[in-house]
Image (cartoon, rainbow, N blue to C red; front, side, top):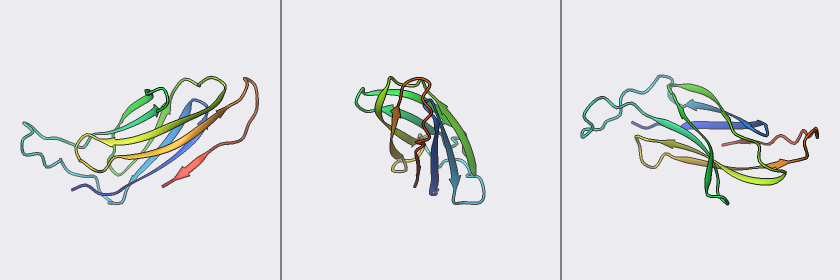
Amino acid sequence: MFENIKLFYSILGLAVIVVELEREAEEAPGPVIASHYPKRKDEGWWLVVGHQEKNGLVSIKRVPLQVRSKVKLDFTAPAQGKHDYVLYFMCDSYLGCDQEYEFSLDVGEAGEDDDDEEEDEE
């Protein structure tokens, strides 16, 4: 059965996002109940960073999630200016449990030191 999963993320730099995932349950899940699937099916989770204005993906990673997981997503730093992205957390086994988080990057000129790190927690 699907349980709630908490997602926390922080932007460490212009091209690295660290995502921490934690299940509310204390033990790892068993196989997915999928009677029409020909063999054992375990949950599959994906983290995707998308750029909605350009209708493109900038990073995607399959996440092995038992109880806790910490994942780094790397992508190429965009051009100078403000850029809006969406972090998607998706499951390939259950409907209705996908999550999305909007965030922005404000890219300055090369060599600038800017401590405007964004954090979001949900």
